[in-house]
Length: 184
Image (cartoon, rainbow, N blue to C red; front, side):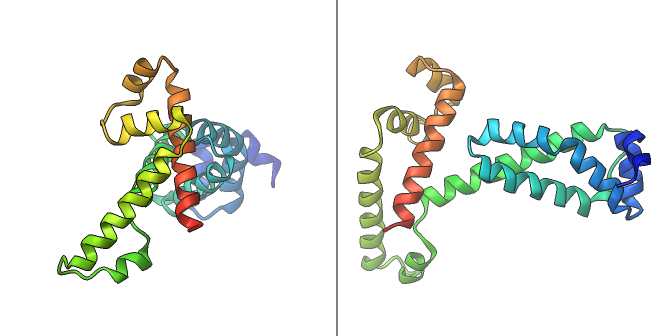
């Protein structure tokens, strides 16, 4: 990478990237990658997922480079992209935990047959057993969040924990449930 790029501002690098200058964009990635990983890891509590999402963020920014608005700072733009990716990831993770696997769905007929009702009931019973088997703090945090609809702050207050501890407990509970589901 050329030394000239290190002296450029973020917006100057984005302007060059908009003209397909891959080295300019690489300079931005190098400038912000570690910071991105730290931020994402702190939100997700999973460094592997944080790395995947960081790469997705920079790939999305590259794909949208010609639409970048120079009146915003690159850092603000990057954090907005990361925040949206984290929200999408959490939404997907929540759906994955709450839905039967795709091959189970294929077994279910669309008419709402007795077979469908049985499979749904069986799946819910199995999930309930897995939730009961969770460590007490994870189980309580997950149930307050998913069943009671409480916010992280409300759960933290009720459990006398920090919001970070609550997020971590819920993340670990979901991860355990996904492993159980995938390992059946």
